[in-house]
Image (spheres, one colour):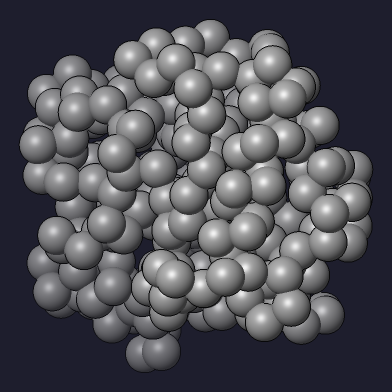
Length: 251
């Protein structure tokens, strides 16, 4: 495991630990979050006492990084250069949020890698319906430009019919997200498609890591429109700055 992969794994474990604590509080269990190296689990909920069955967890995240200063020149250059490159390629109705790594803040992202990212986002945007969301992660970057993995952890592309231009931001795309929780549904089905459908995720816990990009209104709207028994995965949780919310409890 290289440094980038190790950092990504540490972030995944950190996102799941608050969920473990919430489960423990509600059910009297003793789960702790541990890294997993075997797909489809990013993280394992393990019981140190051995009293409770292990739970495999998949993490889907919306970019964020509160350690990045808003006036970091390298980050501002990355955002403006990528936005300009996307506009030059004819992209519109598009918001991009990225989680950048230390190399991006310290040294900046090379022009060639920004161009390659713009090319990939252009292809994605052209095939997306308005309101759609698409996540580019470490494995995606390896597919079209491995050098990007040294600078960006992941990126989310969001299509919005209320926004004619291009927005690029970090920590995320909060201003562009719909209030009705539709993007939550998109995030769930992104993972569902990746792992082959309902049967493949029947025993898998999904943790959606969104930080500041979700509020209680969005969660309540999603729950009202999506009865737990109709949702895939064994259980679904959201970890946000407003708290940890359960969209589907494990039965």
